[in-house]
Amino acid sequence: MRDKTEQILNAAMKVFVKKGLQATTQEIAKEAEVAEVTLFRKFTNKQNLFVTVIRNVLERQFDSQINRMAKTEDTEAFLIKIIENRLGTLSKNAPMVKMLLSESLMGNLDEEVDLPNMIFSSLEKGLALHFENKGQVVEAGLVARHLGGIFVSQVVFKNDRPFHLLSEEEKTSLSRKYAQSVMAIIK
Image (cartoon, rainbow, N blue to C red; front, top):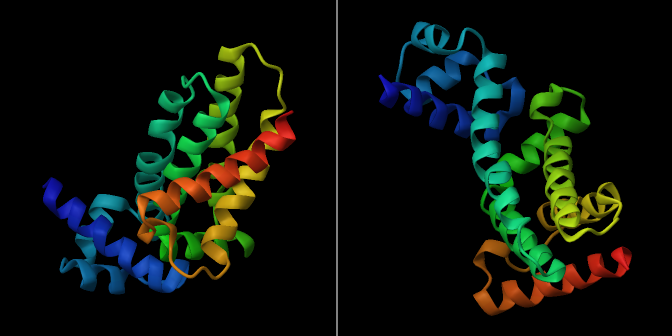
């Protein structure tokens, strides 16, 4: 039973990336190689399927690691970890990220799957936890906005190579530069 669910989620991801919310349940069922009724039995409607797909990917990729990283003592090292992690994830999932940004800008997404807000709230919580652990008073929202801008720009603006295809040395160098720019607004 779980295999069918995974099969549907993977197919839905592919179709949503290509067509956004304009995708039909018939297209998703065809891609998943299941009857449309199977789709509705598992997810009741297209919106529920979309939310499940997006939350599944984003929660697995974003929220699960930030609290662990927040325990890093050195703020610059913490920022580098966040930047490398987020840029790697966003870069690998660039088509989905672009689709979510587009749908978000058109006002088509519920708050629970609104990518910019998900990125921002996740970052803000992790940053607040880090600075609280250090006993520092820092405006976590401002830092989260700065980081969010870095992340979105890496996906939206043209790059020679996506972040996830850079060498480890190139990733570290770029992440360090971004971290230093964030450190400048913290001081």
